[in-house]
Image 1 (tube, rainbow, N blue to C red):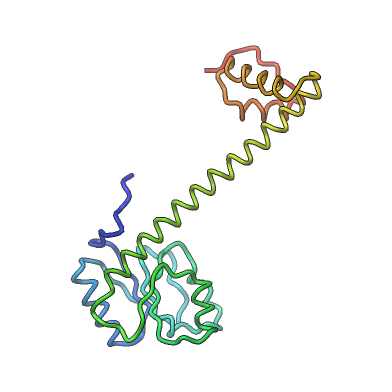
Image 2 (cartoon, one colour):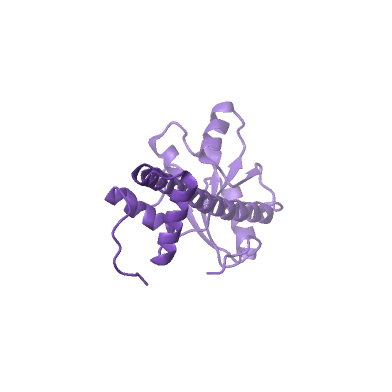
Length: 200
């Protein structure tokens, strides 16, 4: 699947969570010029279920931060925060929300495209970083399994660590499986499993 360039905004869907008519008019006009689809939502209400949107433009001043729904906006959709009030409590709530980009009020016609590009790029990087972290965690889990299997072979066959690992590697190659899969079988069986057939 080809990933979208953060510079490509035409055809993407934006949800406006705003109340000020002037701000809404400015954002609507700019997003329409950029070829984006626009929907609106009342900032006083909870997030709409099943948001089929690519970005949320949220007036951070319009969300009551002490309400139950304030924390519900945190999700996978990138948020562009519109900021006017710079109180510590409001900014702390905003940081917890992890906006992908922001615009300072009063809004002007300039700056929205930049905020969109930054938001889409930031969201893409977060997805890539999460996938990378998951891959690293899988590797760590696999190494623990392999280490446990090596220790079991060392104890069971009175071998050195190098020899035990070599035996596991050779057995895995002979049976056309991975070291990790064979290691899991060794742990489950309490020793080298009895593999009488070759697996393709």
